[in-house]
Length: 380
Image 1 (cartoon, rainbow, N blue to C red):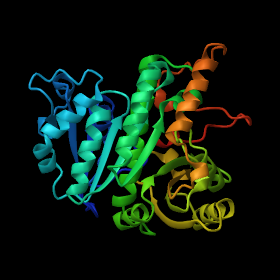
Image 2 (image 1 turned 45 degrees about the vertical axis):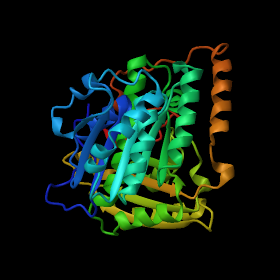
Image 3 (image 1 turned 90 degrees about the horizontal axis):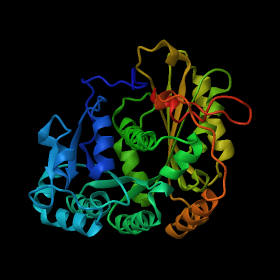
Image 4 (image 1 turned 60 degrees about the vertical axis):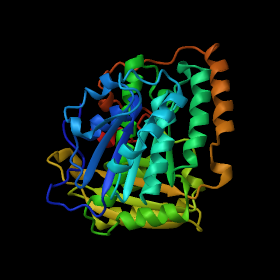
């Protein structure tokens, strides 16, 4: 449960771009519900589903769009049903997304609605002239080989219809955080979708001392369409700049390697006790470890939080684009990795179980017995 936000945004802040977040299917709807609890100025929400019952969980019915047959019984894990439902609702979708500069689609790959409807929704958004980004999750291995194959095929279709996409590996989340109950696994997945989307929104709407805005994100994507890789790291205390950057680069949820980027947006959020040296250290460390040819744009803002523990915090968000082929995880690579993991799971011993059920308070231990890479620390 989020008791306090690292970044809080005053309602008086005017958004620099008109933004709509579209949650498609079960996973997309779940991340949307979490995002609606956060103040995001200028952001509107659209919940799309073929399942009428799922949409009933939204108190505000104005944001809901049921697609498919009038009974609203879902897509039955059939992407073709989800696709046709979106095609049939084309005019309604087009109307919902009009006059929007940035459309972010949140969905889970592998089911019927998210997999099938998301590419059609993205196509409509682009026809409207919107910059379109998809943030999608790939299935856990325990969901089965067939679902993974459906997800991979759906991802390939989606790639063709969006300006940019971000892949979240549920299996990597599971590997990073240990053995979890099934419901906890999906909570991690939903929170991850939420926070990746939030990091993009924060960069475009939060006032900065060194400014980043929608135009920077737009230029990044237009120069480097395709996969975006997002890393988020948080650190406190001595050497926090170096630690936060390291954590962001080693984020447990990304498929491809940030080190293969040709261009990056680096956003730094600092607490009240931060100094200009902290910000300078981030820039110097990024320039030290990244290829000299990488074009990096920096921005920073101060966190607004009533939590005094945040005063010493430093958060680094890296949005990387133009990933070189040798650093990418294409569908065949992901497919082969899934097959290996399935074979391995038949003979491997159980992992250590995380005892703390409050997933937003969980931290990892690395080989130096220090705190985790800071990904979930950012969202306490």
